[in-house]
Image 1 (tube, one colour):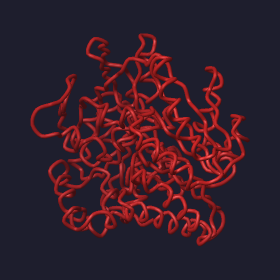
Image 2 (image 1 turned 180 degrees about the horizontal axis):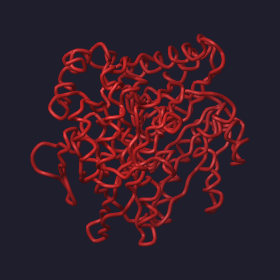
Image 3 (image 1 turned 30 degrees about the horizontal axis):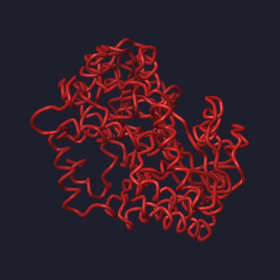
Length: 477
């Protein structure tokens, strides 16, 4: 994966840069020793690594502003970092960059149950947002698989979703306002504790911008009343295409489950061994969950099981207790950890129309044989957000390159059937050089013109999102 050559001018001024940063941050909040900066050399896309010039860990918005102002004045690139769980290389540094981590910024600032919002510093983890309000009967809806570790900052940067996004939407549907610091150190407030802001939808622009426009330090998030109850049903099929058709039929019937998750034969076996969830032996597994009152749940599941039954399932099992429901979900929630125990893998993030699921799953199986690499499929089937996991051997010369080529073909297929390159992981470096597949030159120029406004010097995460050749003139200037 190509990255820009580091600036010799910045590298030669490392000591001066570090000294300046220590004038605005506590000494231990500036990490410059090479052995310690290795902790920040990659994110969850671990195939690519590069220690940064240094890393800084500010504790509040004012410290972030002071850091960015210094880096702007000295022409130093900055890479914002949440918890480092990005699967697209969104927080991969260059040797001349400062990693700006928000991990220390994890406080709840305000909670308002009457108006249903919570304001937090963006280093707070996703799951702990719900943890702060659950005793009062509320929760925060977006639930990425990494929710135990991932930070709200990264969720906003990549517009993360999760299993329950089918009903509740992704981050942009649950984000009400942000405090953001621009590259020159200005602190701006966008949106707030109300339904919608007037004027241009700058909040929609910030969410999903992958750290290209500014560093989000505080976020106002929508919280919701917990539903009365929820219940999953597990469906097993001996055909991936049939399982894909079941998903399509459920959506076409006008039913809106809170989640529809898909796992293929490989993932079923691996997750069963890892978690003991009690999954059947079959080619494809669906987990469909609905919520509401007992009567609502019974009615929805009755319709869903009727649709599922028409396709001759190997197993059709409705959870009969909270323990059984937790076991059904246990394997799915552990999918990435389970596969990581047996192999190196690359996790993709293409999104397709639900009606295209049968065709795409079949074609991925064919490509797996063509490239000679196994692939496991686990994804949010309800909204077509796919997460193929391509298995490879990082110690085998050439395997990573084959894996990358295979992944590129899967993502091209997603665009070909009317989908897009990413649903929630972002573009980062992983899909950067595929942007030309989805966007023409005029589209990319319009997107880069927006970055020109927020970050004219192209110092924020500038090696990401846009193909290097396309952004070269701006980065060089």
